[in-house]
Amino acid sequence: MPQALAAAEEAARTPHSHAGDQTGWRFYRAGQQPSWADPARRDEVCADLSGRPVLTRLPDLLRLRRELAGVAAGDSHVLQAGDCAEDFAECTPEHAARKEEALARLAGVIAAPTGLPVVRIGRLAGQFAKPRSAATEDVNGRQLPAFRGHIVNSEAPDPASRRHDPDRMLRAYRAAKAVADALDGRHARNPADGTRTWISHEALVMDYETALVRFDESAGGWFLGSTHLPWIGERTRHSMGAHVRLLADVMNPVACKVSGKVQVRDLLDVVERLDPGREPGRLTLIARFGKDDVRTLLPPLAQAVKNAGHPVVWLCDPMHGNTYKASNGLKTRRLDDICDEIRGFVSALRGVGVRPGGLHLETAAEDVTECVGADVPDEAALTARYTSLCDPRLSPVQAGLAVDTFVSAL
Ligand code: PEP
Ligand code: CO
Image 1 (tube, rainbow, N blue to C red):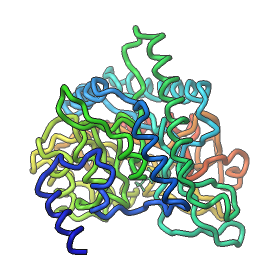
Image 2 (cartoon, helix red, strand yellow; image 1 turned 90 degrees about the horizontal axis):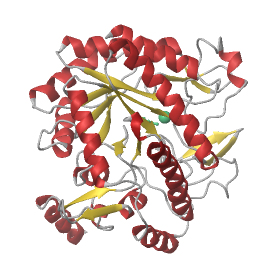
Image 3 (cartoon, rainbow, N blue to C red; image 1 turned 180 degrees about the vertical axis):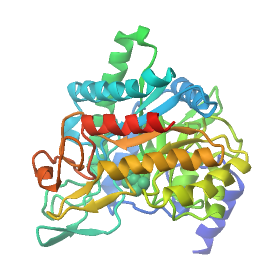
Image 4 (cartoon, helix red, strand yellow; image 1 turned 90 degrees about the vertical axis):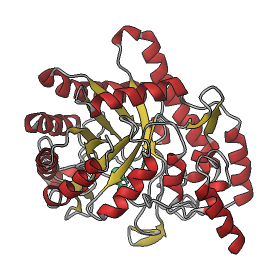
């Protein structure tokens, strides 16, 4: 397709030309996209979303950027936490309140001993899309299309529920808005509190995200109105890919996952695209190396980013590099491994003179039994309250211990 290639090259030469253009990103490779069952309906849904109010406001995005700049400067820490995959059924104001309270309690575990403020960021109000390593999955001996998050399909184990339904993007919008509105309402009722819970999710489904990009006339630029802090996942962070292109063009603070699979050169490419101005608060890197690799593989990457002059915030995601299958088949993680990675993260960064900015965790507000350790003594105990739609989350007790580990390692 020489025409498409020529257009892509032209777009690459003229940055900031295609944000919000719902076709421009199609010139770039976008991994992990749904195969919508009804493409015509997809177009209608995107057109509908394009006309709806967005969930976030530019002044708030800029305020979060300033708060993250404070983290980069050493004045505060970040706690980013929540579900691996949010559930449409749990997007009520009551659920939002419980999640915010759980997050605030954990933030207190950092704030009290350090005496520094904590920037609280929920994995919520839009955390509905999941990248998957395989297109299909085995459910009780049956091969089914993989569950890709409620914005795409349902976790119910039958082929009809697993089809990629574009109307789910509208349901995702409504569910996310309900949570965002609930948090805004709580914040408005407690303005004296000063702090608020920012919202974040993996910006994965390009149809949805691009439909919620808006242009701000006074700032003369684009912003992504689906969330405050969008992040790019481990599987979609190619510097020439659609996801990086989209986040490069919006004024939000943005984040990107980093693992030991990335080469220094490739990481510097991504970081250059996302933070060409080397602006504190613009870019957060979320390290998810696994306990065995973090001490050896993180230091050269952090050193290279520092040498290139990017004042990024580094967070530790000690979850995604430490997942394994329990003997009963459940996906799980050991709290010991998680704490080990947290200690390794802090020492790895300290070794190259870079500040550990905080934690990125998968947590539940209820006392789930999804990870092993503390109040979940062994793998046999996992079956009691395993309710995650996707990855195993820490219970409040386990999360408190993980956060404690971070503080003690500082
Ligand atoms: C996640 O955060 O749920 C996730 C899928 O992470 P990663 O992209 O790092 O695998
Ligand atoms: Co996850």
